[in-house]
Image (spheres, rainbow, N blue to C red):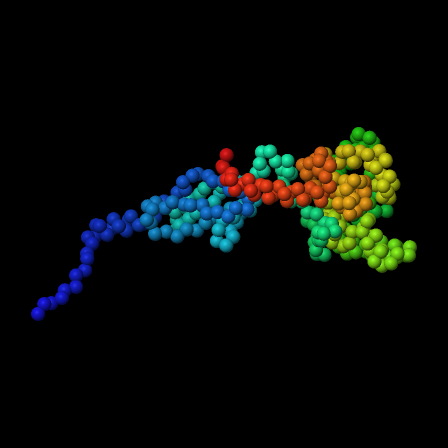
Length: 327
């Protein structure tokens, strides 16, 4: 009778040691010392294990500078900048430089180059939340406000630009202007709109007529840019009047405010777009580059924001054919 013998394959101690050594992670590297991506891109940086058959599990290490983030397990480029992306497995690690860029527009594009710096807008079709309050509000010093107008606030950035503009106006034409309105809360805008409606009804208008006519001069709560904190009404006699443009200050403001980052928010020839009557005293801070583009191209904010959206689409299409490079 034959006897079955179970045979077990054996490995010499020396060979087993070599095999274990081969599978042990010795280093992690990247094929390049830096990589480039566009803002909004989700990507995977491909590390290389040495040896390649090493048993390894990775942990990504992202700097706290806000340039990169994680979305559904993938790394996402959140804002432009340069950062370091790290990877580790146990006590072995490696790093790669990551350059995040905004998607470029085609070289022949005529659309706003700062399309990615989106400007907030509040108007008849863009409503701010009743809870929205801008950051960095500061009290405007009383010497910058008109007599009887106290306790006015604006964002620090807008007011600092206003001060620079005011000094320039005074040095050039010895002009003076006073702030009569700046930040308004949602509740305050409600008061002003309701008052405008009541005044029109007192003149014999129906409630429907009054509410419609009030919109020519006063926005409904949530639809006023004063709630953004970077909008300012100015005057040289404590009133707002279309004749302000005929004053030396009004003329100077219309011709020069863009140099300091402001726009005339409701231009004379754009009321069919803004749906607000011409207000030469009403200025909005958007930054010098945006303001200059709008001034040179005769655009109101509604038109500019629309062009920003078109530019975003154009940049998205262009980036598909032109991947980011670390140059």
